[in-house]
Length: 109
Image (cartoon, rainbow, N blue to C red; front, side):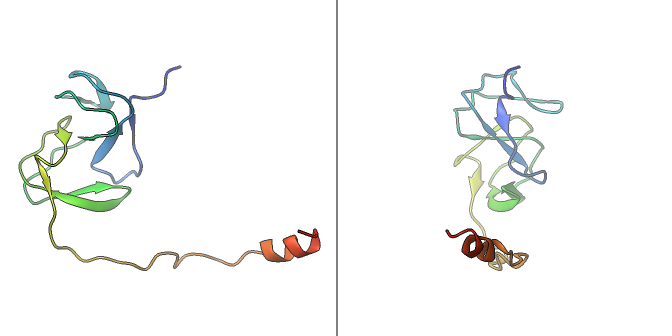
């Protein structure tokens, strides 16, 4: 079985990533097909986005729609821009200690 034509990085993402160049009509998500030619590695919308709406990849805001974006449309510099938003830099807050260090000492690593 062939791999899917796109990669979804997070369930909350509003875009998926093209594995290879997608031609118009290529399925990219449930009930969504590519409207444009999408180069490999580029983003394609999986739902409609209004101007000013946050675009999410990795579950994080990567920009804002600068124009209406339809499902299946190429998302790139022509319709995506930057904007101000609150940022949370608290990474690793859910990290928990492990006994890996003790295991390494016990095994002679």
